Amino acid sequence: MGGFSKTIEKNSVSSWRNSYIDYSDLRRKIKSVGSQPDNIKDIFNSIANEVTRAKDHLNIVSEPLPSAINSLEHDTPSSSLLQTTSETLLNLISFSLWNLKIVAKLLSKLQKHNKQAKKIFLEQYIECLLSLQNIDNFKDWYAKVTQELRKIDFNKKNHVTDALIAKDMNQFEKNLERIGIELDKLEYIDLLPREPDYPDFMTIFLSVFSSLIHLTNFYILTLAAKDYSVYVGMDESFSGVLSAVNWAAAVSFTFVYSYWSNFQYKLPTLVCSLFVVFGDFIYAFAYNYKSASMLLLGRFLIGVGGARVINRRYIATYIKPRSRTVWNSAYVAGSIIGRGFGPIIGALLYDVDFEFLGFRMNGMTFPSIIMGIVWAIYSLMILVFFKEPEIKKLSKDKVNDSKGQSLLPMFVALSALTIPKVVHEAFVTSTPIVAPVFFSWSTEFVGFYIAIMSLAIAPVHIIIAYTSRRFQDRQYIKIALLVTFIGSLLLINFSNLSVAQYVIGTILMFIGMNMEDGATASLLSKVIPPHISEGIFNAGLVVTFAGSFARGVGSFGIAVAGWINEDPSSMENILFIPFTIVSLVSLVIFMRYYKRLDTKLFT
Image 1 (tube, rainbow, N blue to C red):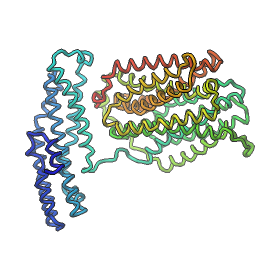
Image 2: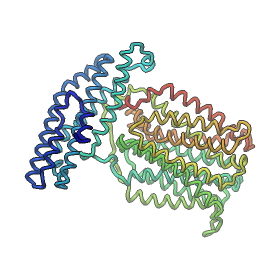
Image 3: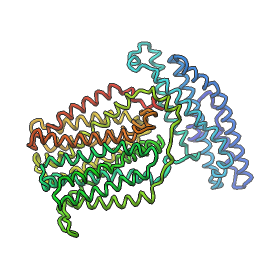
Image 4: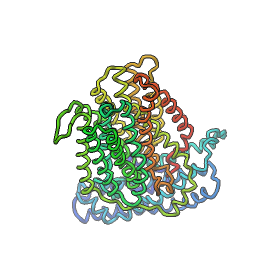
């Protein structure tokens, strides 16, 4: 017996073993087939007959399942019934999956005799294969069985004293976990053609690229913001106000863009990019006029031009769940790379000093000129490559059914999204002020330090993307909140803040923020009730508003710390003692409702 035959036997349902496609017999026929068209046709017929036989068996054994599931919905099911129903569904999905894998293996062998064999077979027998896949029925049954978890009282479940019931319930949850994995494999099996996971590559690419250049734009200006503030006659802490204005503008206009995206995506994305173009140039020209008002206006327009709510909603709406975590991670990775490139470019341009057409180009103005040009080019790319997607509307029944869904999971996820961003923003904005005092770091070195940390931690998103089908979002978020708390704790100056303590705290804080961002965005897109996601308060707005609000709070914290005590050496504790306490509270709340964030509940 060959290796694949042993694998089939190992994974087959023992009581149905004789109903699987006879791989060994068909393999022997293929070995002797030659390349004659008549022989190939005979093999096609043999494979098709086996597929039909397997399909007929699937229809027979699955016939009682719908009525069994209906009884679960209308009655209070026993633990043993839940366990056996889920096990039956798992066996059916496994049966379908392995028979299709057998067909794929046979066609692969047949292609050695005729390279067009797979293509020809699929053209002739695709309907039969799709019937064996039975994906729509399986997904519907899985959704209905999964909803039974909603009937379980999570608090009481942990105190079940009946060992048999506890064992059945534990097996039920394990079965659901395996069903989700097997169903995903079945839906995306390579043998069968499928729709792409997104409607247009360039559109999703431009959406992700927007996150990179927008965060680059913000952080390229942060490094010299304190110098620019002093130049226009303000205090160094005014740099925190500039950052807060940037994010406050982004928060304010998320509602406008969220409403606008109910009708279209391309035009609001273009308008956003043009706002940033004007904001960058106004920010640069403020130098010649020594105008704090122009600085504020420039940063305000840059904030207004943040299209993150549009980008996030596009990902949540048009990217299939299988790829949503991957693209969310890519989007966040773009932001992280932007946070890294911004300080690096800002540091490289810090000593620039020349005059061009009567305007002074230096470390305070030249970065915004560069970014203004980049955004102008991006605007042209939107005009040429961005494709307007078809606006999707949920059915009234689905919207009405969701109105009874609890909002608690959404709010818990939001708190998990907000806290790490507050800590991160406070750190990034305070570092150019605090690090030179404690460690005598130059402004250029601070820029490189933040950039290196951002870029070094970016691979976290690669890990999340590759493991996202093995772990749930809540598992990543739990680790992220714990790491953020420890990182924030280490940023407190207990007696004598050392470089090692500061660097370790930075690394942990960056890891926590990176982990939670993509995972929380993905979780929110799954737990947010459909009647909310359909309107202005959709997943894109919720994630963007929370993120921008958190960054605004973190940035404004710098100004507050400056008002409380002008001595930069006290800023670290004024910021991170309360933020550490808030981080701990957020972690406790998340763990309190951890079971309510099981994504199987929102299938």
